[in-house]
Image (cartoon, rainbow, N blue to C red; front, side, top):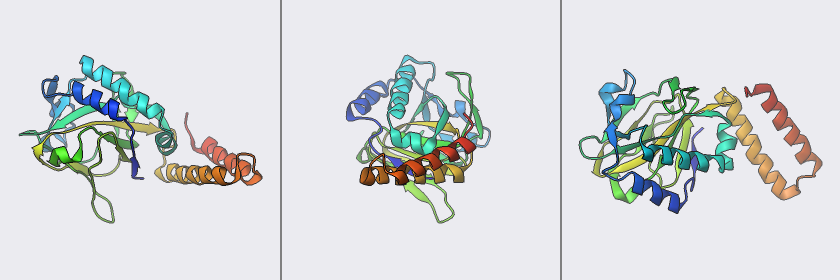
Length: 229
């Protein structure tokens, strides 16, 4: 599943994030959080996880996710790895092709999180930098993603992906992983499709229509069968 989450962050939240992620923020070498495979391919900066700015911004992103019904329907989150923040510019301007670790430990919470889904929240406007696309490999070809500030892309954690070199300006983003209550990608996508169809039926027929009631029950029975809460 590749899902574009529009306006995950409001314009005011994006402005707050940018103010906290200025050039003089406590940026550190992004390779400090890279696995062995990624070390040779990662050249970026990350916001120091123990900084005051990181704590404020983690809370901001997590609050946005809590209020986004589309994110919940698609991800069915059981755990969310604490949001991190990175910057691509100058000599630290790319992250080569890699696949994220299957299980990651959060410094903020100490929890182990299985990376069923990856998410990038764009904080820079596309016209503020050249390059910097999130390039995701797919069987049908590569998908290039460069979204407006405040928008996010949710995609399978199992995919090979990269951030192309930034040749002008700075690309600032948040990124994190989600462990879903439903481990199977196919089951999770089926539930999401059913939920979206049910939403349209409710709008057309109302909550009390027998077909809506019955299909809602089927959705929850499938979720009950597949979910690990």
